[in-house]
Image 1 (cartoon, rainbow, N blue to C red):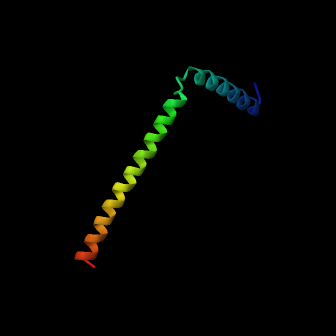
Image 2: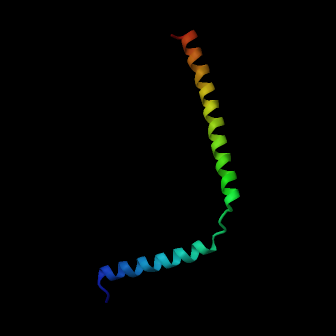
Image 3: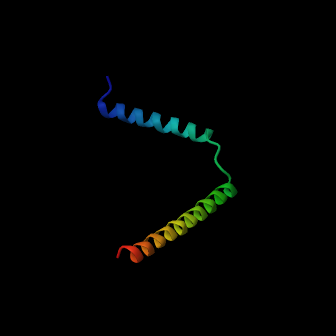
Length: 68
């Protein structure tokens, strides 16, 4: 019977080997596709921020005009 720490080391080693094998199977995106997706996310974030800012401005204006 193996000591407990040897079981952990064996399991960790096995996990790392299996992870490396799986990482080799991954169809990684190209540099161009990664750049395209990054730009898309940034643009979407900016558009979302502008939209939420506009909605906030409308609500603040309505609150100041009718409630406060």
